[in-house]
Image 1 (spheres, rainbow, N blue to C red):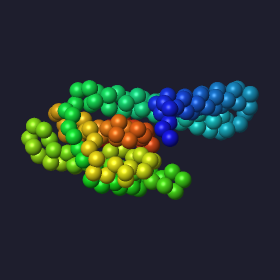
Image 2 (tube, rainbow, N blue to C red):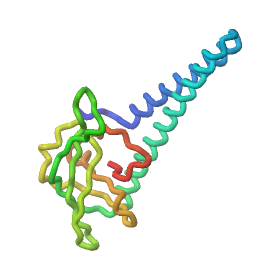
Image 3 (cartoon, one colour):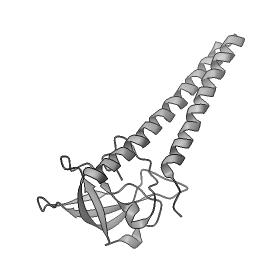
Image 4 (spheres, helix red, strand yellow):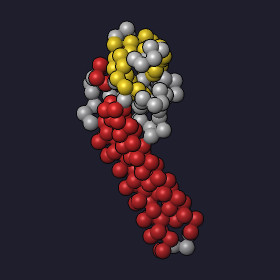
Length: 170
């Protein structure tokens, strides 16, 4: 089952994180004004600031990651790749399961040179797409920046949150 709008859902939960942090900061300030136990108020303030920082970073990274992916789809070099292998992503675990990464072989349309790219992680079973063609969008100036369009092929949304520094993009 495909989640409806993963970006909106992600931003919603990160906004809750920010609001929780703001609440903790306000609680720390109120507790400081009404009590002489400064340690508790400093702790509340620090935890609140941490929540706010995590929420803001998450929203910026999500929006920037989606924008990078969109710019690669619009301006990147479109190549056809073939999914040759499905691997588990051992760096992430959800309920004892690992997301799956599609490994694709792509031939550069300008140089004719073959190379390998990897998608981001998906919680769906990708093994049914083995040996299928998939669109790969590559930055014309930096081949390490690319986006494997598994979503178009499989109709699934990625599990692994997009990171602003992630060069794989999709």
